[in-house]
Length: 132
Image (cartoon, rainbow, N blue to C red; front, side, top):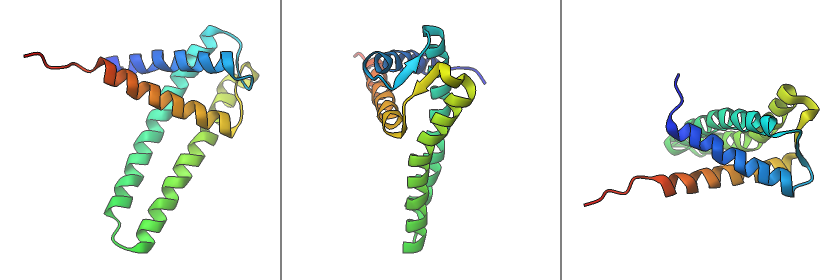
């Protein structure tokens, strides 16, 4: 699988946001720029998986025709949303150990929201506008 230009831009955006978090949030720590770059790549990969799983669950939620089906899909969506933050914390700990810390559940949640919003904003900024 080959990286698309949008993927490279996402990693650059993630590096900037992550380093801003490192600078301004005492709970977010990285021992160097290389580690923050590698952390950004890990975040990019894990968030891509989370977004795909979330889209599958949303498809089930939209397709559900019974209350029970909607309730199960909604619960699954909540598990994906909350569980993904715990998975990110675990992955960072396994891969980088104490060299990188993203804080706890709240700081990782805020970081992920900031990453996704920043990515969307940069993608919107860079979209080709037809001239004519």
